[in-house]
Image (cartoon, rainbow, N blue to C red; front, top):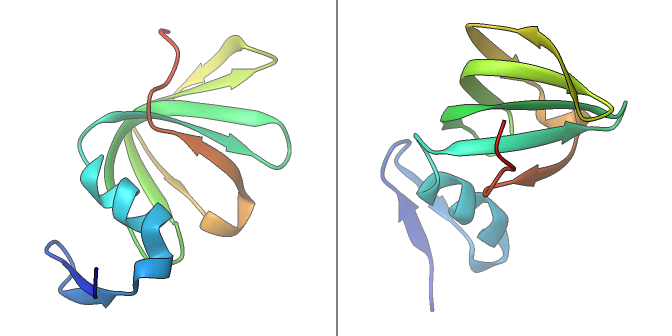
Length: 91
């Protein structure tokens, strides 16, 4: 398969970095990001980097599955992420 180039950042991605490749393909799409503290954010992912830091636009916070807060734009630090769902449940 070989290396792939990430067009939006101009970096070379190793085949073992497939989760990052998936995130790059889902840019400008809706995602759900679950944090280690059980908080969930849903919104449009407008950017991500090699550390899995994510920028969400139109972000909404959910706690226990219930809506808690609406944000405009939000930066999620990759080290706090438990998982990312690229096909989020409807809000």
